Image (cartoon, rainbow, N blue to C red; front, side, top):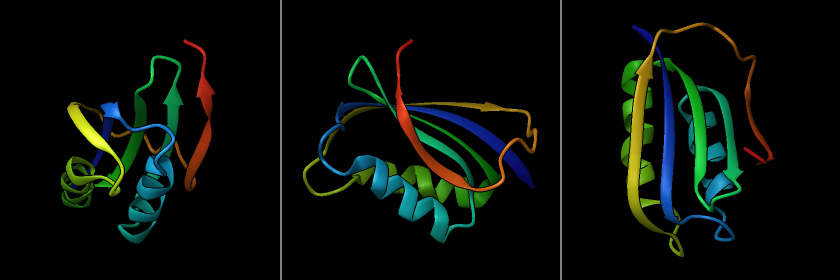
Length: 95
């Protein structure tokens, strides 16, 4: 089953290689989407692909890279929309 998920990770997740950690794991799991730092210090992920692979990524997020500290992981499942052609790290959003 193909799914789409928006994830916001709060904690010490910037400046510790978190985006690259997500990028590597998403690529290994054949997931599509984006990861970006948010101006408030969180990291946001939009990801789509097989639901069980997204769930594996969510478990990896809870661990994170060694220097990170995860306070909270907010997950919002939405309808799959086939909106990505790969997985990319993008610049910090200014929202």
